[in-house]
Amino acid sequence: MIFVTVGTDGPFDRLVIAVDQWAAESGRKDVVAQIGRSQLQPEWIRWRQFLDPQEFQEHFASADVVVAHAGMGTILSALRHQKPLLVLPRRASLGEQRNEHQLATAKRLLAMGKVTVAFDEAELVARLHRIHELSAAGEAVGPYAEPRLIEGIRRFIHA
Image 1 (tube, rainbow, N blue to C red):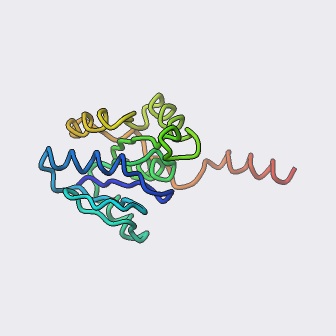
Image 2 (image 1 turned 90 degrees about the vertical axis):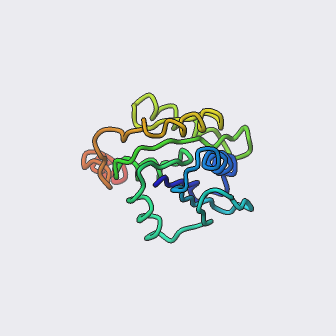
């Protein structure tokens, strides 16, 4: 199953439309999406605007691949659960975000080998056509920060 999530920052219609069109072209019927506050009604994928936390975790856990925006919550969840992750960053230049932080995040994590990135819809569809080539990024990350980082922050706060 392919799980698509746009996070909770608002709609990300560019991502949802591209995945819906790809599902129609490819005949994939195993795509489930959380599409946010959108007016879209995708035709080829199963979708809901929002999932409660338990449903979200169930879809995430059962997904073979996750397709998402480049939000850190989604990225960390994919790394924690060792799920292959394909991201399409929201772009401030397209009115999808207030700045280009998702683009910067995606570029940095791509360079680290942690995510697969599509920088536009055409690249997203091309990567979806080769979805079987995606793999999880190495070793899982834990649900909490490293103890050394926590201690450093604690010392800084109490200094």
